[in-house]
Image (cartoon, rainbow, N blue to C red):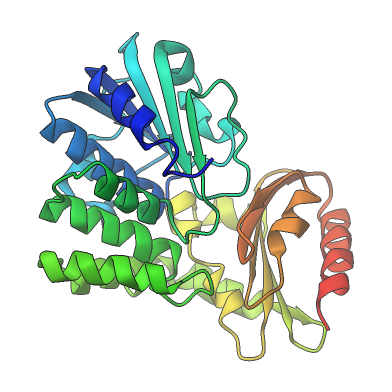
Length: 324
């Protein structure tokens, strides 16, 4: 459902709620964290009692937003008048917070993935034509005539920048730049800090892992497909958590001539996290769906249980269909 047709209902649900939970997906990224913070800031300005949730560790790189420290502090609350679900493509991605829908009287879901799987929502807005959920929240604030503060603008910029790869990815549109232009015209957003922390800074303790990934990288289809595998022994050796693993896929994607990449992390014996990336029109979401995963056209993922050999066989067969 499009946002325009649901604005009045969203407004009414918020107006009649006092105790509100805002939740994003597990292992939250910048879009998830940014839009949850922007929504929470606005709700609190309206006098609402707000709790924000996302299963997984909130990276310290987002602590330039004070509210990033406030996730997951109120898990003992047994009832919410309203649950607002943001940037969530599948109810299963609530992770540890899958108990929240049962605690809420009403539910609003706002997302930019294709056909989010979330039943029993009172309002479900899905707009995959937008690069980030942050763009949809910005548009919603416009319909609601919400006053956007510097903190909200910082959160929305974070959301949009992170899901467009700092405006590098092909999902970046003229509307994306229009939203950012308006945010920057009205607020002194510290884009240097935001962009450095999200796209340039790295942990020096990760250098051995980066070297390992680069050394073990393999290529297929004349160098158009890059393949990186981080086995369980490496994950265990360097005690790699989600934050330290996240972003390693860029070293596969960024090679000259590479149009697609596979980054496989063995999280446990015979359990693999699969990250797929592409440039241009190659739709890796369709490939991820073959593994019961999903995501966006140029950035998708899945969890696979079985043998690495079989996983690679499936992926290579699928990429053979789409790479010239």
